[in-house]
Length: 187
Length: 187
DNA sequence: CAAAACATGTAAGGAGTTACATGATTTC
DNA sequence: GAAATCATGTAACTCCTTACATGTTTTG
Image 1 (cartoon, rainbow over the protein chains, first blue to last red):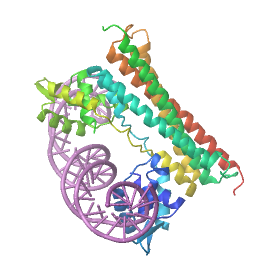
Image 2: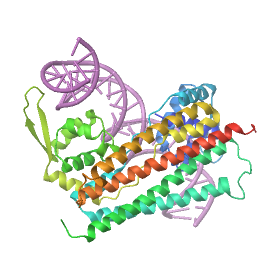
Image 3: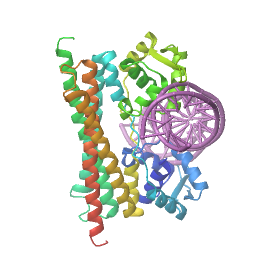
Image 4: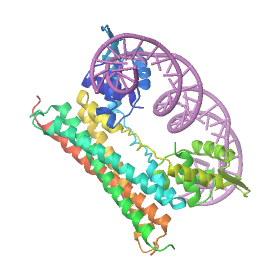
């Protein structure tokens, strides 16, 4: 389980409300750990009960009150303990791979559409990541001498970029393979 | 949800018992969809109730009886329907990325060990995949003219190989970044 | 003789998803 | 006037993990 820890990291990078966290999980940290607002509010409440985070109610005019969360010392300790704990590299769940092998017993053209759709999604993600890299790390507005936090954020982003590029190349391989199967005489 | 569908694909490739399926989920299909035997027995029972698979009890001497499962026509139809259904590319859960960003607020040397451990695991997986590729697809014992099922299995395996290579290169990038951070003067 | 392989399950709990609920303000 | 944004929650359900349970045979 790492949602608690992802929240701790995000709050250490910048304190904020559950709502703000939920939005960060739609970008930034959400690129490698997803969570919905329902999950976040539930876990945040538990973390507050455990003393990992501290909430401060902020009254706002015209808007609902919000709870501003910051990491408490017990939260920092919990994060540190987790960093020392060895974790098994996560198990993979890759629907498309199942679909590809399933297509041998079904409809190859349905698979073709699905692969093309995946290609578009991953292509957009890559564009998005590359834009973020320029904005935050390599462009003219980026810090000339990044600190540790920024260096680490950047290397994680480079991982996302490498993943998307690899995936696009593989999806092309899948498309070529599907065409080859489609063109040859049935055996 | 795709465990049902992964089971259908595996049983179409080769019928077998729940126990045999569980072992396949430790290799082969398990490379991109994991499941424990508890999950498999439970889902298999539900699938039998839904008429997706048919079981035949096989008495054995010296061993517990086993149930030999094969896909029924309703199962084939369900798989085909799923192949036509567009699926969102899966959401990512990457513990190590969370740990890397968390290391900015914790212990960089703990992270270093963890990255090296990951490197070993992925290196072993790559070796294992490559051996499987030679055995089943490119070596002298492999079929000269692969059928559709084998072509598709091969392209999925190539995806796994590409993933492991990309991951190893990225982990090296992470190691280099960590060394650079460690060597420079603190800011 | 111990451990691994064969074979199938139950039970409890934690994690994640989907739907429902409310209500003001700002933007198009 | 509708839709999106801000802000927080509950409830029900499915899914997944971990631990427990049983008993034989083959292999080292």
